[in-house]
Image 1 (cartoon, rainbow, N blue to C red):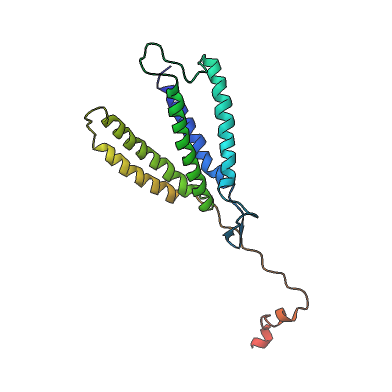
Image 2: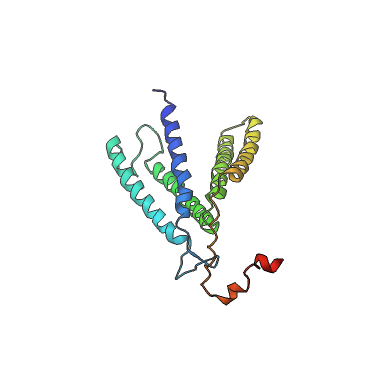
Amino acid sequence: MNKMLIPILFALGTAIFWGCYGPTIGNAQTPRVDGKPLLPPDGWTPFKPYVFIGIAYLVIAIAGGLAMMKVKGDSFSYAGPVPGVEGMTHFLPAKWGFLAGTLGAFGALCLTTAMMTSRGNALLVMPIVFGGAVSVTAIVSIIKLRGHGPLEINPLLWVGMGLTVVGVVLVAMNTPHGHAPKKPAAAVAEPGDESDSEHQPESAAETL
């Protein structure tokens, strides 16, 4: 099996899950009364569904992570030294894991708030999220690599970032939208209603 196949499949899985994340969390927006969001205590803010996003992360990340650590034979110590590597301990994955989790949590909070305040408009929010994330990843990688010495950057990178912006706009503008809600049916006139009889069309004899 090609060594690149597994990371590509998991990357595609991430795109699928996160692509469904926006529309799913859009279902959790507070009800609207007369076109305005219902505020607490009758309604809720984006923080209410965010709590259960955190619970889902907690359950899946901790339970799943510990289970896979056991399967793969990981050490459950986060303090012991790494044999053969001077000055490095098992605290490294704890430090960077917590930092990455913090960034992910703030990202989830921003995404949840964006979805709540845009009336669940995933067509607007999600292309910006994914298109912007690609560019941010490239910029952070450049900064990180430059810390190790001179770095030559292909100009096509900036072209790609520009095309990403164009792609975000095209996707957001051309994704199919739902149909507008049907207008309520006109009220049926009651027999003998005088107000309606006043508006009846003239007979053919009267028009002659």
